[in-house]
Image (tube, each protein chain N blue to C red):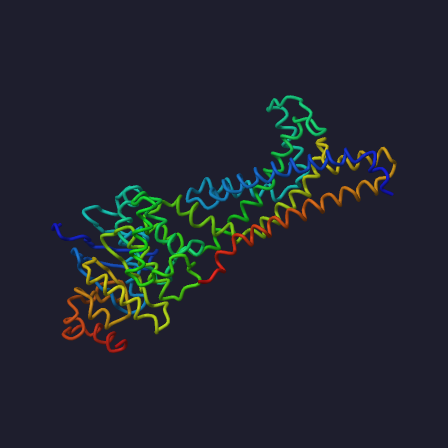
Length: 228
Length: 246
């Protein structure tokens, strides 16, 4: 059933590498946007908070596929990315595609960060402020590290979703794993086996990712449990 | 303002919408003076204390600390003023992801009050002062409430403050460890620290205070030295409060 792999495994490897690449870029941009927009969202300035609410509402309320297409078609008009091929796809598709993934993920990540930040008692902020630390230092050195520890499981979920949903970039012609599997399926006139291979690849990727997140959780949690 | 007044509060008033929580508050604190705020819950003691380093803002009237008016101070100025006022909270508020030592050294190092090396030395001497030398590398969660509060005192002292504000420092503690925290505070008082303390520990107030402010319904209803408040006052509200708590 999987004999085709002998011939087509390089295609799947290339697709896997592409999926990993766009996922990493997407996660990275998502974290950055999440941080920026959670600060907006919690800001005392009404306008900033409003901007963050609108961003989160729009991203959460519309399909990722449409977001990706809109961003791709808009960006390709204003962003002049050279038509370099990388891992089987043009960078003019990979870059807008990963940015779109990041923009999508940023909204969810911002809300995850917010849940973490509001879970930290107000006394922690007051302790920082009363020592003479600035609000910024208090937020970034005292509140956020504690918040991040609390939200690691939720962040892990978000990263895993992103890896799987990166398959929507297929619609704008990024040759990630799903696209490659469909391509191979078309050649074989049989879609089931290549799609099973693609599913297995996603499973392995997300499994490794979830193990990494668990490792991080353990590492960050150890301090709190330690007793002297 | 006279030279020796470290803190001057004048006509302080604070309200949440229509609910007036502080009204017509005026008093001064001299260097090395110990001022104790007592009174029934909801009387405004903690709110007043929190106005002194502007953890609570939006008040009218004046709070002057070392000649600087807090309400009109810029953000940067306010931070510098806060560095000179240590605060100890009812719930300790230690940073749970930092060791005892890191809790104490974090602010002085971050704010460049001390070099890391000096901050660590200072922290160790403060830990010795509060009797917790052996806990430097422990995390707060592994400590008892009394130990945590003593670390919190050491953390506030690490900034070399001019004034220490205590917001019901023993109210969240088990009775058997209240004494160890009060002991540390008494030592601090004996060393000449200027202290403003909100507490329900009446015998502590009697022993340590130079001035007692009895607060009720957002006002200073009665004030004087401990002898006056605890023995001589004719104020019926003070008398009835004290008869209930002593």
